Length: 424
Length: 188
Image (cartoon, rainbow over all chains, first blue to last red; front, side):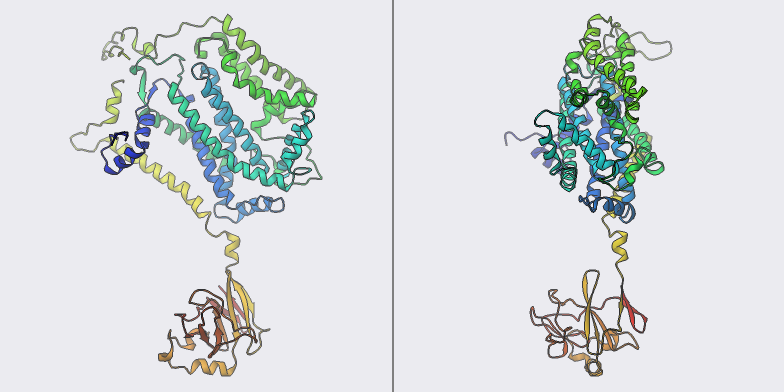
């Protein structure tokens, strides 16, 4: 029959399925033999860690949803029911709650890898932009998820953040009413947040699929930032990176387990153990730690609309990063100035996070304003100029070359000679 | 492709046949399988009845308001439970039946608690297709044997809850219960 895929598998059942839907061939091509740069460091584990986290979050979330009640009268109690009465409910809830933090830790490090090694540069611009979409979806999902337990911080965080949209001229208040489904954050809001919180992770799965597909078209970047020149620069993904990722996953799960079993509430806010009270605002309204830098940017500007724009802008600027950075060199390893400037930017981000924890007064206002200015300065001024002015270090000829030498290199005394570089 | 990749996909067995690599693969796979099981079990077990549902799995019933000849219906684990205080005549008619006359032979003594044979406690679900038979209210039809009558398809039960007229195949089932005092029972 013409048009049917010719499957190479020996096992008759596998062959039958693969001829009709070549998933086995696809897995073999994309995850077994896929040529991957051989010089990855552990920063390259974090994409896989993010996928593992997303899977665990979806699984635990589905089982939580079997017992959760998205009604203002019942929500808080249903979470306590999960913690106390449902078999292993406490475990599923703590895994899910700490998993949100783990997801952001892993994603922020994954993004840092992209920034440091220039993974956003051509031809990976679209890959990078899809990554920014993933970050935005994660933030929306996490925000709505935090509202669901209906604690004090759930309610007031929802009130503050939905109220942001009233900053937009003319249509602002109408947008807020639309989001609320009423005159304040109340039952309609909670109900729709639950529906959307269940939905968005599956949208995430779709975008992650596209993100990985785009990666498999361009191939991965690597710590040297130079293109793969020949098959000798690569190793098959299996078993090298399946093994390396397995190690990373074990370490990651151990850290996640340490939070779940030994300090499950250390990253949370005690205020959320108080059921939501629309008539009493807590002394400090603080979002979860992963939102603190953006919260600091928001509050650094005295003007409501400008603060909102600066906060959203800090994420939107990431979309155009591939065009802001004019350097032709990808990896910071060969960019002597960018190499320490990126750490200054990270410091600014951490300072913003620290300021976000405190009331916007005194030194914290000053610091968050300086850090916000630097954050934007890095993207909008420093990067465009730096690319033109910086003198990069000489790039190696290929990934293999630093190890094998120019023509395969001479042998060290007493060792075997390396094979000469293969043709691509 | 670097030379080492060839070695990765085919392993050269030593003279004994099983290599260290095979062992390591087995250990790694077993570890992953055990891990997957350890993750799957709490998720699946969370679907089992939770502690508050299990707490409702037993119900205490006070029998003092139930006068002779009267029957009440209580709910246990979502099912109707008939509790009838039988008259002397009802007890006698239940005990005097020949076992060979019964569709589902069972002596009355096996269906009541010793010393308390005026109390019959049954799961009030017809063994045919699951309707709740009539017979507890004084105005209800009780069928030809004075027990219960199922209006759905005409099954009739006697004063011991035994099926005497089909299409039901079995006697009304007995829930697990015990007398905690002369006037109280605990069902479940």
